[in-house]
Amino acid sequence: MGLFGGKDWNVIAVIFERRDLYQISGQRVKGKAAEKARDGAKGHARTVYWAVFDQKGSYLEGGIGVGGNNVPTEVLKKLGTELAKNRTVLDVLRALETKGSTNLAKPLVWNGYPPRQMHGQN
Image (cartoon, rainbow, N blue to C red):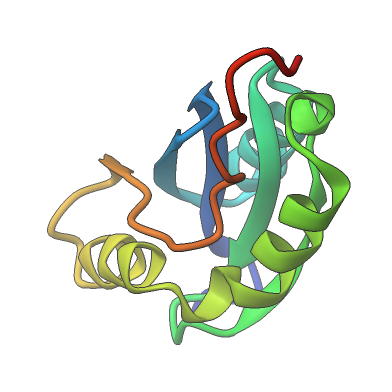
């Protein structure tokens, strides 16, 4: 919550770029724009996971995005449990919290990407 009870959120979207690369897109937003940003992150065609944090870094809400069908279920589960502790996410949140930026995107550094498929497999 902001100074007078309004929303002051950091909205994170994990965007699918390719099988072995997701991007963390972060946005600091306030008031009614906060809900709009959250809903935009949820509904983006390539968002595999989204989350909302307050300015103290506390996780408020999150879930699988519309693009979650691009990622195996076990990868989504792992991402959901590790997102709030991931170094890339924490770096983005820190930049947003300190007002170093209101929008920021970085490649997700993470050991949970799906393994490479062997030749001849789909």
